[in-house]
Image (cartoon, rainbow, N blue to C red; front, side):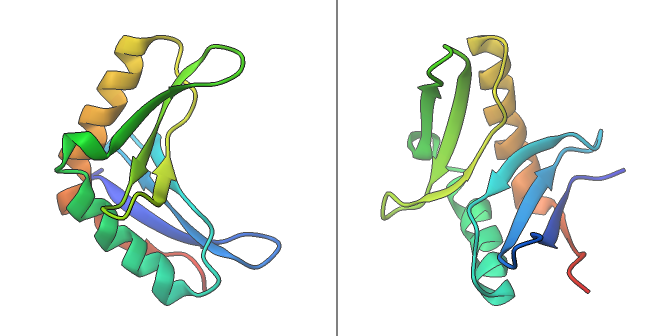
Length: 111
């Protein structure tokens, strides 16, 4: 299985996407968008910004778990990762987004 973006609609209406690695694991979940077109634009923003290391904001949750937020050029969040068990695992997640995002196919699951 190749990497892919799944475009989805949440139960309360907004659209969002998940970037999944070739193993099917979600490596990035987007912000919520009011329109599907905006979610698709968000995917293009991930593809562009994933190539810029400085756009990955490395953070820790209140419980101390490492995670990251991918930001657009204007500083707005595009998506965030899961909570990781270690800083090294978070760095692997960032590398996975950088590797997979540019060529991941888009699966529209909103219909």
